[in-house]
Length: 174
Ligand code: IMP
Ligand code: MG
Image 1 (cartoon, rainbow, N blue to C red):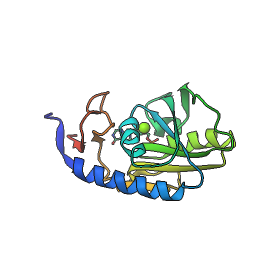
Image 2 (cartoon, protein in one colour):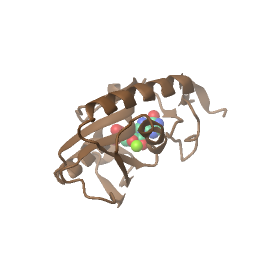
Image 3 (cartoon, rainbow, N blue to C red):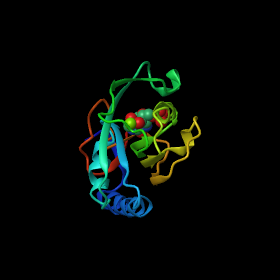
Image 4 (tube, helix red, strand yellow):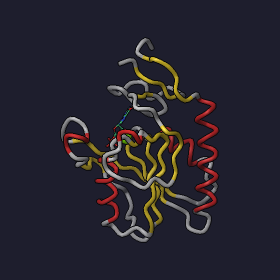
């Protein structure tokens, strides 16, 4: 754990915020149960906690994507879909559940691809928003925390596939 510089969001803070987000989503989607879509693997911890605070007959589905080059800034966010959704989202109310939005390039590319499938609505819920680094303008309906411009790990977020299991979010030593 020597690479960890410090905790940014504690387990308690995250759990409290996740409960609030779940209540807001429950309220907004009461008459139209959503399909929650998560990108493997970073978003699954957040999804697993959040969905248990949304008391609606929702569905979940997963996508797995892979960047072509060295990060979204080099590729403009263009990604390859390794695993597509299991079910059609035509006429569905889709809510994308993200761990973190950084430049926004990956998500804006994905949203364009998903919009082409004619969902009834398409919104975004992210745990962390690194808005200082945003390149692609994005409308974020639900946001857990504003995230400082540091590389963070934990609660699903990895550094070379490690640290996803930390119950808190921490900054990595540079
Ligand atoms: P974006 O396209 O720049 O918004 O970033 C896409 C992806 O980069 C995110 O979904 C994360 O998987 C990853 N990422 C961005 N910032 C961090 C971070 O601080 N820690 C871990 N992964 C990150
Ligand atoms: Mg991600």
